[in-house]
Length: 414
Image (tube, rainbow, N blue to C red; front, top):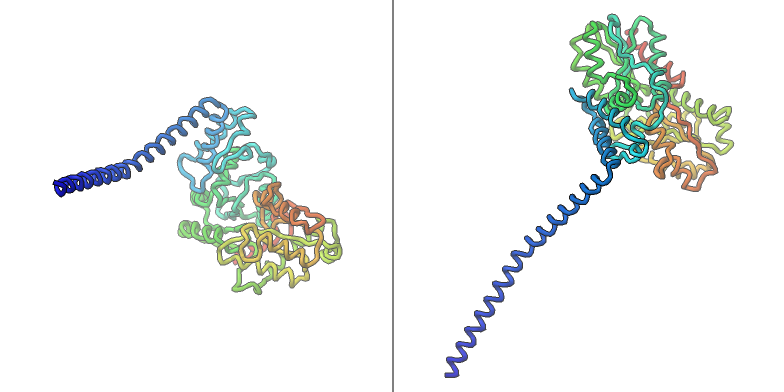
């Protein structure tokens, strides 16, 4: 009897154990579903709260709508809808109150997109007129939305070329559609991109086309220009592309040329005069270093910046340092240039762009008020008594304009 009772008890224990195991398995299986359901409920609640906040704040809703319209035209690809999108963005912005404009914030949108005063756009000339004759000189630039800089740096080069070559009709193209859209939406100024400019040349019956890039070097922008021109090559009797500002790139940092020497002398002379010195040597004696800030690139042409540093040394400008916004090539980043200038014993610094146009990089990355601007970082380093900026592009320097004229003349004479 005891044996039978023991058997019954053992069987009951096994059944209980199995039931417990099944219960645990069921809990483990249903628990993730419960967590997932909780997450979905939380997300739904958060979405509902966002909708409620937007509905409760019509000012933010209006600002968000404008931000979305700005982000839609902050693109590098032009489409059939671009003109209408630019007009819609400006119309929506103009409808905002001043308080609503301050709330505009998107992936690329902010109050400065339409609100920042960059000068009088009416002083510019988009150079997109038709009926221009058989000879066209197309000046291709990256572009800038800073109106004053566009007039002083880009238009000045175009004007110099038109004066030098009156038998050629000077026209303009920008390679940055983002900038073209910005200027069009904000100021109503229509600037051709490369395809538009080349199509315009074809429709105008141009036979001889000369292209003068205002780019600094044979970099990515120059490569894209070459690809665009190749598509239209057969539609003209002759096509010639002039050298960018610094001429041929060369194999390494030691390779310099007459173009680089001319640019080095021109920008240094302008910086020295702007700082109130008679010469670079006089500035050095006073403890002043000049930092010329380029854009920087991962393209193989980045060696051009190292070559410019070599060129400065060859000319005896030991108090000149070449930096880049992107920190490429190596050793041209802000921290490296701060260390180099401080270790050389200079106590004053003058920043100036090594860029054809004093646009966004010059105004913001170089001379801006944000903590990560070069002006702020040089000041914050505590190594210098004074740090000043000259926000002036290369294009407004007469010697630089003359160099472009010479480059254009070289291909026209050929």
